[in-house]
Length: 333
Length: 231
Image (cartoon, rainbow over all chains, first blue to last red; front, side, top):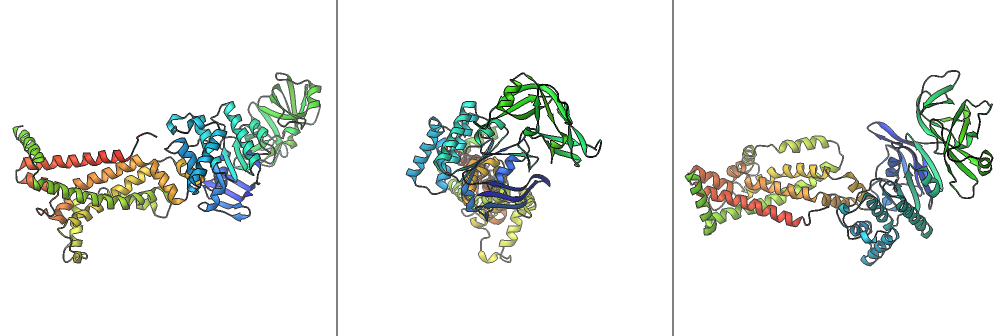
């Protein structure tokens, strides 16, 4: 179990990460989603023991670990824009194995094996300037897998890959996890990939973990209340009403399960009612009966309905739709 | 112009005549240059690496000191070294004054800040992802340092070349602590200065050309050591 406990991290006095606890269990598939600048890369670097947190502890199987020790060999990070060493692809794949003192025959076996699985065997003799960005990313993932870490940390691993390459990558990760107890923690801004691939999706916003699922997260500036704690925040072209005593910059979250989906506006106490059109329908997990309805209501919102509800409303991409939710359903943190 | 052309003619004649004194001076210069460059780079490159990569209290001040030392006048350096090595100086017992070792010591002190400052700049120029990648793949401190150095090898080779160039071209300190003694401490630069002052322009030019040739040979050798020149 790899954990961050009470971790706060600052760059030049600015807090970029503030987590009470973040754990990656053995064999887990965790996706961390969030917008650019939300702290995903910092989180992965701390988990990889490449940086020491300003405050807090990193634990590996309950023991405090720090950068510089041998514990680092349990986890490997592939950065968002990975870099290859000034050498051939084969030498890059061999690097981590050589520093572990693995025998030449075993090095060759592992390199050939991982290269075949990621479809980079034809690239083994090439050097970094002869590769595309997507190929560099695949080689970097192969290089990380070659050392067979307990925890693989991937920062936007499919950002430079086309769809086919991304699918190959996710399939390889699934095969690797089936083969041995590998935990994977992946940072992504692509919710669809995160839901399809991970067992556990966590949202990060402004360096903090969101208490709700990662859809419908907005960075807002809350001004003074109109009545009591009811505040309105501008999000895109709409104003979202929220009950909160917080003032100033904040993250506003609308849980998709708290949104009522209808064809016409409902007579209700909901302070937030928005008309729009369905832009996408997605079934993220087979068999759970939930459908994610994405609609453009002036801003893109995601609601969750049942298959039965979807049928009753006859929703399809392009259908007019009304999203309603109470001001008290909006989470502000 | 005749004077210059005559000088060149004399220079080439001396170069290819196998003059023992000329080649003796060249070999001594090469020996001092080699010893001083090895010592200066042996100390300066790791120092530059530490300055570039290890955060420690006073790092900025250390970098400022090293950068300031780049502009240290060689004559003043020679003077200070003279004071240290002279019979009544604190290092007088070593007996190095007016020996090639004294010249080499001066050259080391001259080239050390050059090697350190330029190595720090070269290492700072390496993409920080290289270090992080080496570390995350399990490399320890030394292997990580070696990996970063490999990435900066072209720049580091240029550091060595620059250090060698400064060492063999130095005259102020060599003249002061070496004494320009014929057959013992006469280097190419001190000899050029002497023969120019004596009006023996051809000989001075010949020695100057040998100096250039040495610099060229060292550059070519280093480029060959660097191996293939692509990423």
